[in-house]
Amino acid sequence: MNGSALRADLFERQPGQSAVFSQESLLSNKAFFTRQLGSWMYQADWHYKTLLAVVIESVDDLPNDCDALINELLLHYSKTPTEAELGRFLHSSARVSNWLTSNPAPTIKRLNLDGDRFTGDYAAGRLPAIDTVGELADWLSLSLAELDWFANLWRTASATPEYLKHYQYQFIKKNYDQTRLIEKPKTRLKLLQRKIYQEILTTADVHPAAHGFCKGRSCLTHAATHTGKNYVMSYDIAQCFQSIGWLRVKTVFMRMGYTPNVSSYLTALCTHRVQLKRSQLALFDFTQRSRLQQRHLPQGAPTSPALTNIVLYRLDQRLTGLANKLDLDYSRYADDIALSGNTHRDYRFLQPLVGGICLDEGVALNHRKTRLKRRHQKQRLTGIVVNDKINIDRKQFDILKATLINCVRHGLHSQNRNNHPDFSAHLFGKIQYVKSVNNAKGLKLERIYRDIAPIDLPS
Image (cartoon, rainbow, N blue to C red; front, top):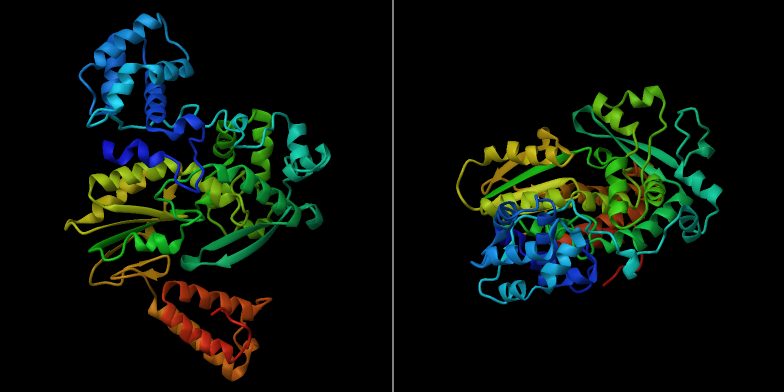
């Protein structure tokens, strides 16, 4: 991965955003550089040659007096200091300060994501200060008994009465005879999850390439990244939420600075083990059944998208690096991965590379959904056509238009085949989506909609 893909300014806080690297010191290039370099040096054997090799491997545009910095460090510390002490030494070093004001300035070319990058956030006032399970219960306005109840660490039997369950299930048929399970938290648990999301998870920045469930980004920005390209490759992460289990979620909370006990309860509130009958489990293949019967991120909980973006941060970094090497653009919308470019080559070689990186990061591709579309073909991402500009898919538009016309002729009930509780609002939402992609087409659909449900529409 080249250094330009991993420059420190990529990880600085932008206006209106929060950051994963959310300590105050990480808001400058110098602090980022010294923190990362110190983290790599801390993991090396404490002698001259090893430290020099680590610095050479970790830094682009390294100045010639790097060996002098190593000697100063060894004179100051006779044995390996703590990671924090290393970072402070490098941050206060006049030599490092001179490096970072030179042209070109050195940059970190490989990131250490296993270090203590979250710890201390809540102490700095960025996260709620919760040190014990009792404080967690108070923060959530619960008693300890209620917290245990919602954490649901013991009830796993499918025969559990419905009123004792915290989730409702919805089964949706998909292509290839597959079934999607929506796990909807009930009202009180959903409120707790929203609090965790709003006051804890939103403090973590997501990678610039992630567009799903991010403030200021959407499926439109995801699609716009790949407009007007000769080649558009799309990949799908199989069972994305279900692939992220207990340990990875707990690690997120622990790296934010929370104790193991508090992290366990936060994880319990954000994950779920299904309580399905044997006949219902039979709708899924062996791999999916295994994941559903273990603690995982439920598709339907407000915390799941944010936790997914945090967990997949390194996946986004690695695929961004791969794209930069190949002169491609990369973005991800939830479980949809897209790469695009104009250079002529046979891009079928990308599938095993992308698949291997995904497996290394704990998720897998659904290879049946891999697509490679050239300029003369319809290039579509998340239902949006991207050949020349973002546009609504013609087939999708025609189906919605036909539904609206039939509603005018025969009434709303004639088209509500899935018994939607508020079919009129459902149709209006679809029209607004079309309007967000193609305003002219959306206005056409709005004029038809007025004939079946006259309401005050936004101008």
